[in-house]
Length: 265
Image (cartoon, rainbow, N blue to C red):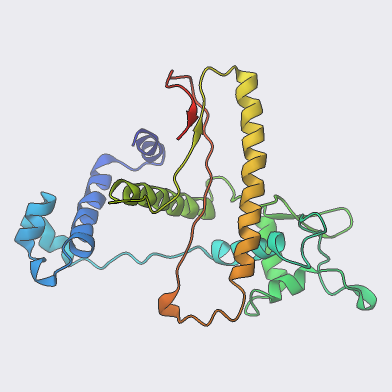
């Protein structure tokens, strides 16, 4: 919790505010995740389970639930970048994202263009508006030939921006949820949660390992994205109620040596 507490204080989130939010969360988890029998969801039972006073439970149960919203830059830009780096004709022979013309290719050419990329995702927003938004968020830039160039091989949100905060929340939740499910597993751990960790590295060795890990991770993420694009194509035939979501992530961290040893875990 130490990194989170530091972030909270730097962001102006005080303990009383956090405490109130956690109190409401304890009640929500007790009602929706722990007490599966509706008859057991009495204020007394919830109070016993959470340690929250019954008067507080009554007050918090009457508050409207927060509506979880996904920033537009995430829902649209994320889909555009995923297709740009994961499917033809927007990648070259080496699997790298192409530089795209703004509009249709001249003289009936077959070059991929940005407008067709946007149209393959949505027809509700004009490609020019999408381009302006991606430029503003630093996701793309215009090269000297006036072509649209992806700023990174994967979507990296602007530091401190709305999109980064959204991904921070979702990825942190999913990583903890996977670890919790593995801890509670009766037999085989259901989710992948592995790491390679080494200590006693010089600063140069640590930087070299970081560079290697970043390149390797990016290659894996792009491969998984391409496979997801293939699997998520039309014709799955599944009803919306049966849809699933998969979040595959990679993290890298560097810190002072704590003498824990190294290896694969």
